[in-house]
Amino acid sequence: MAWVYLLLAGLVEIIWTTALKYSNGFTRIIPVVIILVSGSVSLYWLSLAMKSIPLGTSCAVWTGIGSIGAAIIGIMFFNDPVSFGRLLSLTLVILGIVGLKVFTK
Image (cartoon, rainbow, N blue to C red; front, side, top):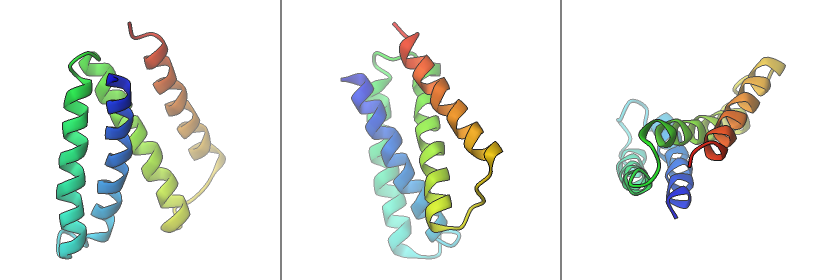
């Protein structure tokens, strides 16, 4: 169940980082509320995952899921650049996450 919590925490991290983009420096109330709620939920689920997943692994996976999701959102909605190097880098992050799952006992 810890890995499910970690996956959920990472997915919700994508929500609050996207809301952060829309908050215009914390000047727009609705995105700020979304940041506070989703950030709290993400950290709560991360804390549940950390009960049985090592600190370094859980933080790396949580950050990796959020980073990959944020990059995809950026490409899809904010015209972030797409290049071979960026896609290769995201692929390496995914491989690193899979490796951490496979090699964590």
